[in-house]
Amino acid sequence: MSKQVRDHLATLRAGLLDHPIYAEVASIEDLRRFMEDHVFAVWDFMSLLKRLQQDLTCTRVPWFPADNARAARLINDIVIGEETDVDPDGSYVSHLDLYLRAMADVGASTRQFEAFRSLVRVGTSVEGGLVRTGVPPHVRSFVAHTMTLAQSGSTEEVVAAFFYGREDIIPEMFGRLQKTLPGMKHDKARLRHFIYYIERHIELDGDSHGPMGRELLDKLVADSPQKNERALRAACNSIQARIELWNGTLGTLRAARAA
Image (cartoon, rainbow, N blue to C red; front, side, top):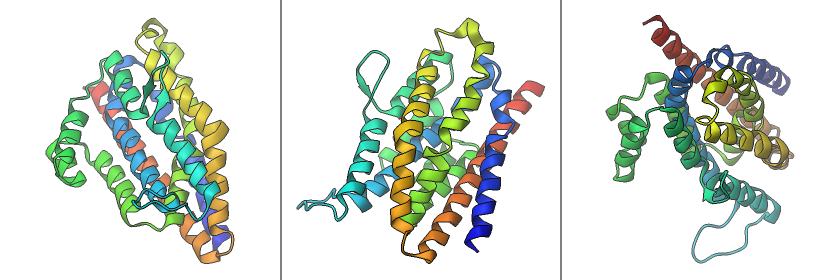
């Protein structure tokens, strides 16, 4: 069964990388609409990472050393890079705040995301916040998948989604998006933070975070075919969720053009 699931995962991965959305983000207007959906995926990623920090490091008081110091180091390294990266001017910034800056630069609206964040911070459920702020159904479905996994998935399922659905594939996804940016050369100054955000992910995820995630996953499932099977299925579901997110965003772009 694992071979079938692994083959399905490879097919889904190829389908995600061949998705038409990358080529269709061809103008600043397209990029604005893309970012207004994608910011929710930038945000919800950290819930997967924080779940892994809970599972694989010690975040409790009183503190005791993690059972697996290497796994704890890998996760803490990734947290540093995602939560407190260096911005283009040498200051520290989370990748979410960097993305929100990039949105402001190109004139993408951050109002919906900020309204959602305000509601959740005062106790509204994630699902309730998404509905109340009018987030599109395809974005709600993607975030719901991520949050269910972060809150109730097994450690190996979360690592698999984190690795296969994010760290492993993001450099290649963003590399495809990068190819359309030269068509916006007249807006290069406004794209400064967005280009930097993409380049940091290609660099960090491709060179260090991705390999770290693979090593962590391999160790977690090494002695258990059942864990390996669960992990592969979670990876498939995460890539399928991203494909469906891109399908929805592509529909939004095309509808806006038609209008």
